Length: 179
Image: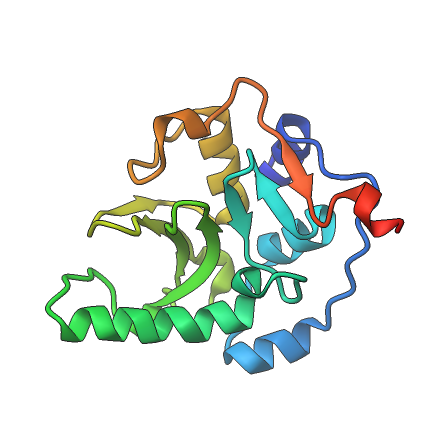
């Protein structure tokens, strides 16, 4: 079994996902190839949130803060500013590419090492109001399975984030799309 088998069993995806992504255009804009599990996640789940808290950044989204390319540009600026003001960041700015955000302002990043091998990237979460960097040794889908199942605790996420029955809510909600 893989994480791509486990995630839909743990958290069923929406039935009506319609995502059409020009991956080469997105990767050109970012200057890097993206992991295959991320592409699968976007195409299988689309835009939305896990447990009404964790949002996976999307190549295109109706909500600006959850757009991948724009978030990559903005977080690079924030990390550089933080570093210049004396913040201790255990990674170089160009080694971090955001992949998710939370309602609390936390950011989930890929650690883009080794360069040129996106399917080997790991994940790290950084708290919005602290300098904690919670590392996970796996890709984004492995991370979601581990976190949502309760097998891995991310210390920058609130304890109540994990639910007995995790959910994914696509947006806009299905009833809003029909209007």
